[in-house]
Structure formats: structure tokens, C-alpha cells
Amino acid sequence: MKIKKDYVVKTIGDDIVVVPIKDEAVRFNGIITLNKTGKFLFENLQASDLDKAELLRLILDKYDVSENKAKKDIDAFILKCKNNGLIDEESI
Amino acid sequence: MHKYLKIANIYLDFTYQYEAYFSDKINEYEIKDINHKFKKMVVDVKENITIPNRKKTLIYKNRYKMATEKDTYIVTEYNSGGIKHLIYHSNNYDYIHITLNKKMDKRLAEFEYVLSGMLFFEIAINENYLPIHASAINYNNSTFLLSGPSQTGKSTQTNYFLKSYKDSLIINEDKPIIFNEDNKWFVSGTPWSGKNVINTNVIKPLNYIFFLNQAKSTEIVSLSSQEKIIKIFRNIHRPNQEESAYEIMNLIKKMIDDLKIYQFNCANSIESAKKLYQFMEEKNEN
Image (cartoon, helix red, strand yellow):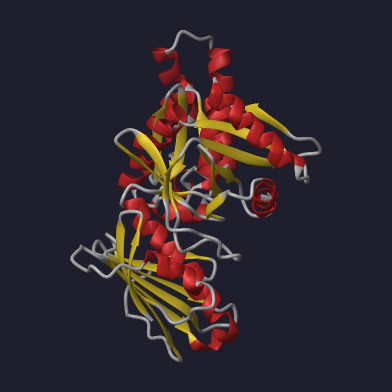
């Protein structure tokens, strides 16, 4: 799966937000907040088409977390992206 | 009608058709000295609107966009077919042309007002101003915004404040623009201020933003930085260009650092205005 390209991620103080730009701004009139893991996943999925197993490997390589916790974080992140229509449908 | 306007520090060469919504308030922004670099906006009305033969780059509901690197057409159709209005703008918003279908008849003045406002706010964003959905009020030493989407009580609370403090000045009742200059925040009136057309051509230093929340009892509460970001984003005119999005996020960070931002849980009562004023007075003393 891949994240649509017309979103920008920005850190404002301690908060990380994702906002739509260009044509996506017409469709999605909202804002999404992420934690650090979410930002890491978001940026990787904007750059490359990755499946869950690849995301898990990336998380485990970068953060000192259990596989269980990483899987939960990935599922929560994907659900958030799907609910907000951020996933590029052609990449699923 | 044709006027040269100065809104905050934005110069606009504006041609429009109807006075109903702008009323004589627009004259406050008129300038005679035309030796400035003006953005140009023209509104006209036609019986038949011709659409250029270009590739559609976005289709959304009854609207489509035909954008190139240089300029953009935005076409809005009637659900029953036919063109309702056509917007052309250069991508730097130096030139904007809005064409309305004559068939809109009694609603032409309203559409002229709403669409020209939307396009002006795009100009403002490109010039580093932030249009915000709010009522901007000045009283004594404080200038504050009562911000919130439609139907959250902006007009009601503004009226309560005005009744309680008769020397208050309403800078703009619906869409003021705010900006940062030399590390200070300011709010400016614009001729676009919602259905009641209450605006004043002044620029005042901005101190407070209160996000409205209808409640049974009045209370002013603190917000986390994340809550502030979300509420600001919900109430600003959204940028659609990548560079503007980054610029605006930098501005929002600065707003959160510099301005006093709270949630105003307000009851539908004139007492809420008094509590709001007392709150600001106490903060100003500290």
C-alpha cells in the first residue's frame, strides 16, 4: 500500500500533523495528528509501496519495541489512514 | 462598479456588479493613489458561459478544475446541467476573473460576494495572511477573535459583547485576516464579513483567540497545543498549494507560541460577554 502524494507532514512544536494540499484539499477538509511512529510510517509509505510485513521490519529496525506492540501500532496507523481516505486505492 | 482597494497591505483592483452585500462599507477600503502593484479581480455576468477546451484535472461533485502550471479554470455546473459559474485565476492570483450565469437571478449578488471573498482569501494566503472564521472585536486594550464554524454562536456572542461594552469595535464579524509583522500579531478587517456585512477598515494588534463551544454554563478553559492546532486548522481558510501549506504551518506554530488561545464554553446569555471581559482583564493585569 502507498499513501497519496498530496499530503504534507509538519512538526509544530511537539505535535506532528498531516494536512492535505492541492486537489486532496478539496476532498479532505480535515487534519490528522500523528505520533513519532506514525510519522515514520507515513513518510515511508509516501515514498514507497510497502506491505504490512515490510512496515513491521522497518519499525523493528528503527525502534526498540516488541513485535506485538509494533503490529498494533501499524494496524492503528493503517486504520487511521483508511478512515481518512489517505491510502492510494491503486496501491492496495 | 470599479474600485482600487487597500485591504491590510494587499492592493486590489476590483470590478464588481452588485452593491447589495458590499454596501457602502467597501468604500472604507478605497484608495485614490494607484501607484501600487495591484492584484486584479473582475466579476461579470453572462447568459452563456463558454468553457475553454482543456483537459479536466480534477472532478469533484458538480465542479471540475482545468489546471496548467500557469493558470486554472474552475467550473461549477448546475445539477440539472449547464454552467453555474466559471472562475479563472493565474496561479499566483495576480489576475482573477469570475463569470456568473445570469440565470442565478436573485442570487447573483450573494454569489458575487461569496466567490469574490473566497478568491480574495486565496490572494491573502499567498501574501502570508491567514483568513480565519471568526468575529474580531476590539475593546479597551484587548483585541480578540471569537472563532468557530457557522452556527456556533459567533454573531450571538458578538452581539452580547457589543451590548455589554458599547464602545467595542467589530473589526470583522465573519472572516478577518490575521498576520505577523516584526514578531507581532495583527488583525485586519476585510470587506467580506458574512451575511450581516459588519466590518471596519482597521488594523489592530491581536491578543486573544477564543474558540467557541456552546455550553450550558460559561467557562474559559485552556487547550493543549494539539487541540489548538486542530481548532486553528478547522477555522482557517485552507491553503491548496504546497508552499502555502508549509508557510501556514509555520504561522500556526508562531500563533501558538505568541497568542493567548483558549476554548470559550459559552452559555446563550449576555453574562457570557461579561465573564469573557473579566477573564481578559485578569489576564492583562498579570
